[in-house]
Image (cartoon, rainbow, N blue to C red; front, side, top):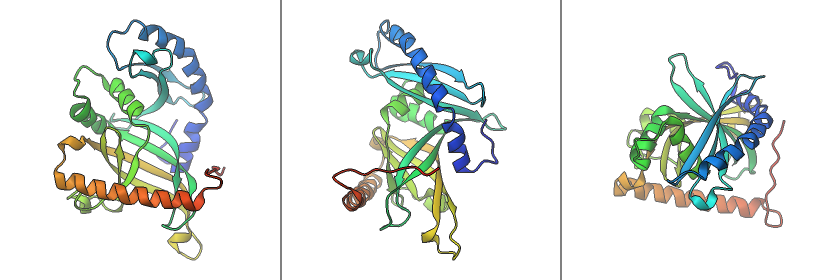
Length: 257
């Protein structure tokens, strides 16, 4: 199981070892989910099933999501891990590989990413976006992860978060997703360069804690305008990176061991 003494890379690698067994269980549960969806009268709908990997004792929720009746036979399939801290606070954990440039003009590289979602984050998503008090904790997570597959990193400033200086360097980025805006704290694990030049550090993994969620319709005009401006700048930088890195219109990234 996950241990607090693990580095971010070790957390990612540890959970990655569960992937094959989790995928097998996804295939096992799929026919059951489809059968239940056929009886469902209300969409979107999700079905989830708990599973503990015997070898690691990591606990997972495997879920299936159908946006409408048209997706009953081919629902979205995904999973997440659940951990509790010493105070019994619940956290949802996802692993991903993202494209990352360590410097503005640096090469694009694949980077392990451990995503941690607090219960507060999902409480706010339920309250501010879903607005459905009948949904339980796992239902809310399934809805969010199914609807918000990707997030655009948005460089934060005082116009987006007026209390930004209280959170330190870890609050440099938020994430804009399909349903709204995510406020987060992140940290980067690196192998430091011998000469102390941080631009030469070798990134190993990123750790992102999603703290709270905002529905953009609830934001002030100035706040939303600042997000739009930062989003445009992020897309521009992304397009320049793609243009610089692409070979025959494609980018191939290989994760180091």
